[in-house]
Length: 427
Image (cartoon, rainbow, N blue to C red; front, side, top):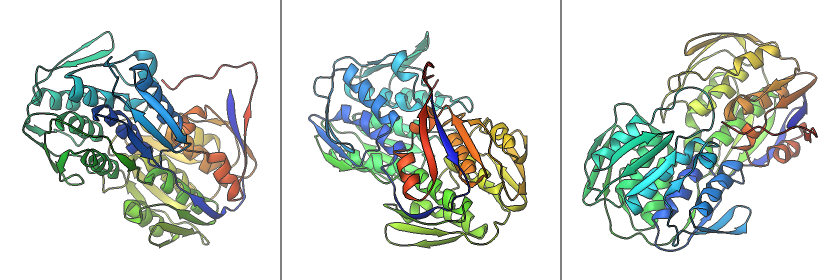
């Protein structure tokens, strides 16, 4: 078993380079199935979710050639088996993006129900509703989702709720449908725009990505392409919060500041100084942190993937703060871990009330999911004493070289392995 050991109390100072966006990568990698030739993908984060995506492609007959640690060439020409088995899909939620890509190319797909972080039910009803609108039929048997179509026909698709996953899946299928598809109440996250830009670079005709109405005119062929993935807004936001939590001064590089606006606004409201440059932001925290209220919402609202991190920061603020989770049903499981470190948090359903205590104390904790794991790292960096964090495989699903990056900023952190134990998988 691997764990992080962090001696807290060090002020983070310096520069940190943000990696490519995990949420864009896990959609763009399956999208290469639609190309008639090899695709070169750059700025890929070197994380386990990306590695699993490559393994899935190889299992189906694709060739994945590593150019360097952040660049690969993917050739899906010889993919012939449109099946993602349970043993592979169970490790990450985004495995369901193979449904849309395989359906678009082969008119059939079979993918196991996805795994990933456990913070509530992840319904795929909107995905299936979208596929059905395009003329596909589906069934779910023994944990496998089977989708088939004689032909995909462009159609009007209206989502009952805003769903990032469903928007991506319907995009992937609709680019190869006959005629025009119009997605209404579409999600607007930056990684959806990135996927649309990637598909358009292959010859797709997608208009309106980043708005709540996306139009896709289906094409018969999609060519090979070369593409660089956008920076990861959640990784950037996490380091911004780390700087604030440690009274630090950090230049967060390789970012798109506009993608960070909702995070920046909350930090500034808490008394943190954030300066925007063309492709970086500088975060300086000197005075006492102030209370605030946060509600997570679909983009451009405050991202749900930053909720555990901002909640942790609010434990260090003065006064009573309220955090409302507006996306997932059960995303406060990590609160028990923060309480072990002295946090005063009460949770009622989707609402957490934080009585800022100004400080945290070291304790043994565990990462309950990816972003909760990042929250534990933030808490450990700010706490006095030595904190050990278990189940760090969650954290490594989404943060490239987090130990080295934090060390470069002055953190006292190391990764240790305990022999004789078996690493659990992310179910």
